[in-house]
Image (cartoon, rainbow, N blue to C red; front, side):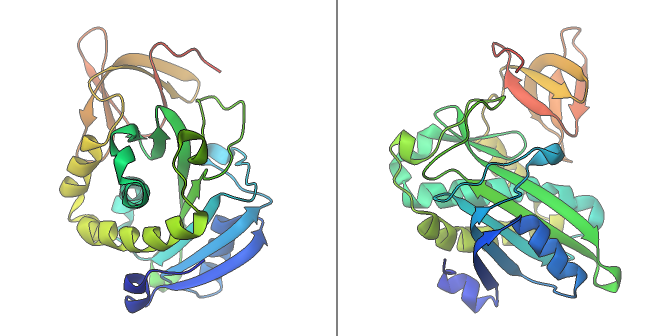
Length: 257
C-alpha cells in the first residue's frame, strides 16, 4: 500500500499490515496512546472485522481494508456527517479508476457503495473522546475488490465480478487523495450543504419507495431527501414525514432477511 503524493504532501501517514484484528480497533488504540493522525491503517486481512451495529465483516485477502484516524475533525455534533464524506470519497476513488462505470455506481443511505444495485463497500465511523485533543474518529472502509461474503441481508458483489478490475493498492492510493478532497469540501461541517448536494446526486432510491428497519421497528414510505443533518426524510402513507437518523434501507420490493 502507498499513499498518493498529495496525501504525503499533506503529512498524512500510513501503517500497512499483513493482518490485523480490525483496522478501526487499531486506529482507536493508537489514539488512546496519543496518536493524533491523520494516519491510515491498512491490512491485507482482518481477523475481527466488524460493520455497523457490531456485525461481523468478513475480511478475506484481495479486498481493501483501511481506516483513517483523525482527531478533532469537527465539532462533535457534526462528526456523524463523516459517513457522507467517506462515501463520496470511496465513490470518487472507484470512478477515478473505472470512469466508464460511473452510471452503475451509487450510494445507499448513509454510506454503502453499490455497483449494479449490489453492495461492494461499507463504511464504519467510530469515535472516542481524546481528552484535550478532542474527538478521535476512525473512518473505517472496506471495499470488496476480489471477493465478497455470501448470504448478506442485502445483495452483495465485488468489483471484479462486475467487470471492474481494481486492485486494492491502486484503490487505496487514489482514496488517500479523494478523502482529502472530500474532507476539504466538508470543512469541519461548514461545507456540509455541498457534501449533501453531491451525495444526493449519487443516491440510490431517492424519490422511490423504500423499507427502513430502525431497530425492531420497520417503516415504509418514499425516500424524499436528506435533511440538513443528513437524516433520511421518509414520506409515510398518511402524508406525514419522518426524519430517520440511523437504520437499514431496502427497496420496498425486497423481503426481510
